[in-house]
Length: 349
Ligand code: ADP
Ligand code: MG
Ligand code: MG
Image 1 (tube, rainbow, N blue to C red):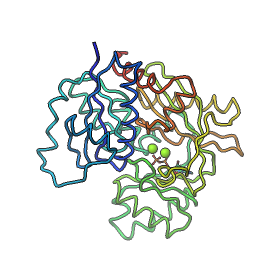
Image 2: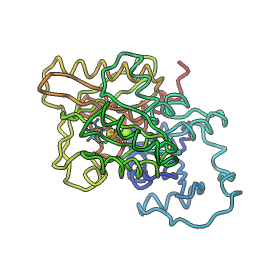
Image 3: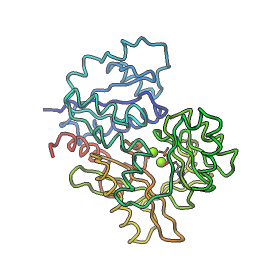
């Protein structure tokens, strides 16, 4: 008999559109001929307001690839789930960013007592918050860039405090540095700054996105990524590289076709690839991730140093995204990858 899989997509996040594209690919993977006897697929679209939609509407959104418009909603709508949700035997949330990748949906599905693809509450939440994540990486001894954490209230409240805060950032990290909201993705709200006035503007902008802000020393490095799959015995894929022709890997570069190139496998010395794979698994395990994660690194070629940048517990999952491509190149085709992720969610280990 077929297992009833609920695919959850969209979500109240800046990465809503990316989620729709990921869900289109995953839906094809679940319904691929090799998976047909195992799974039946039911779609649940969460709109930009956070309201869940029934399978009929969700099917339409997936087919069109266009989000439903934001509307005025009643709080009660956020407490209503389509009745079909009660029949789901395993959930596959492919929600990127806040309200989906950060442990919130994972908590809701845990309360429903139905297994769920990917990390649980802890791994998702720690993986989403760049300050919490880097704190854990530091404790595990994973090498990373120097960073500082500040809060929105330090940036906004007291005009006497702010200049001192900027002095401290300049003295500790220097320029260029990166200012980021702690809990976002897709480079939203991130600035690379080179001067005091840019720093001030960047802090103000990041504070509009999040209460927690991270500032990091900038490095000049190649950007390489490794995919991890598994639970108790996580496996690492081959390493891939991103190259692009802009100041940094910002939102526009990420999502404008032709602006970034993926090289799989990356041209790296074998020892460096191996080190990256080991660090990826270590990061996955220390954060208590499960199922999947894409772990991103900076490779400083001049010194041979590998620094961990971040994990993404629900990485982009379109047919051309890095995560499935890395597994394809490692010998796991897309439909098999989707199958393995669902099986991992259902396994008790
Ligand atoms: P997101 O979770 O939004 O992807 P990242 O921390 O990965 O945020 O930053 C996005 C991009 O910004 C990176 O891919 C890289 O191009 C650039 N970047 C971020 N931090 C640094 C840094 N400390 N040094 C150099 N480049 C950085
Ligand atoms: Mg990220
Ligand atoms: Mg990133």
